[in-house]
Image (cartoon, rainbow, N blue to C red; front, side, top):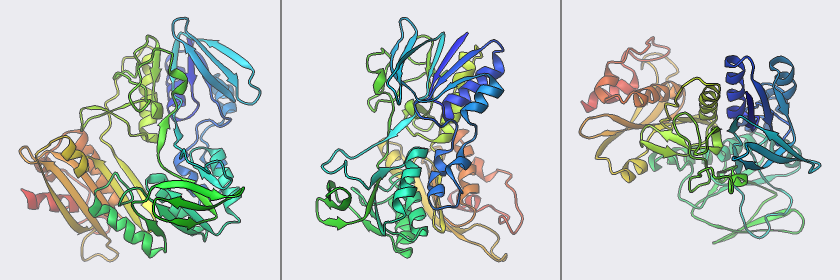
Length: 442
């Protein structure tokens, strides 16, 4: 069986390894447009500030390891430009030389990920304007930011907040410019304002409710012009989200969602026979919304890649879906979310209740306790948990993961009260903070 995988990172290589394990006669070719395989994109902000020593440290396996150890034809600098799904041929060109190539397949996986969105405004081609998605992006930022004093971040999501911290630790003055009235749009405002306070504590400037009009400068960017003002800066990083890397599929017959992501079934199969898709280029079934969604995260890419690889190798497995779990470090606070926020609950027309409570992560008498602001949302009639948001110090990760499990299994507040959670004074109180909150609602 001839397997071809487009994309050499999380989803693609998770699939390749499952095929390798389950089909002894597999002929596997992977096509990657860059020169890096299997690396942790989420670690790149920490390479920029030096907490992670180099980009090499975020690489899990090199192409040579896949070739030598797993007999996978791991190709680099191969950019796919077209797929003929009728003849089952992938066409492309060498990234550097533009030399054409083609590869026949019996089973095909599209795992091309997503590209950073860029502003389509005047001045966007000036030097000193970057985005962060790949290892070359990180290396460019590291080299260029050394000699600047002030950096402006466009956007307030995960990558932006991680870069704000990284650049502040490097001694840069940092500004965030937002179209909206808060950072972290995945949170409700009560939680987001705690992030604003943390930013101000570290001398980070935040500009709310202003549209970027143009970048100003000669060769190098010197200012950002918004709908209200002009802001001088030495460097700009755009962090305004990502777009599925699927433009090359427009004439393939493969069905795409409105945002360009590939529609897949629970087996990760596309609408074309023998073609699968996984990761940031594909849609993700959301268990909370009971519909296809797009929440591109590395954890999901690895899970979808595994399911795709198994099905390609003839093993029937289905993707169980996501509940929308994420976590983020921002200076001295941890920000976690799982399930639906209040905006999402309203859009789905659920009849709901909620509580917002400040709690301590460990026993009150044990030294070193840290506060957490918790928001729980549940269905009013059944009291089934719908969502959880937490911001605070130590212990946020533990509770968000408890919430994620509760959401995955459609647990009610009463069910959560019965959970047998670990307890010792340095780690928890005899009633976990979540259970204390839940008990008050019953």
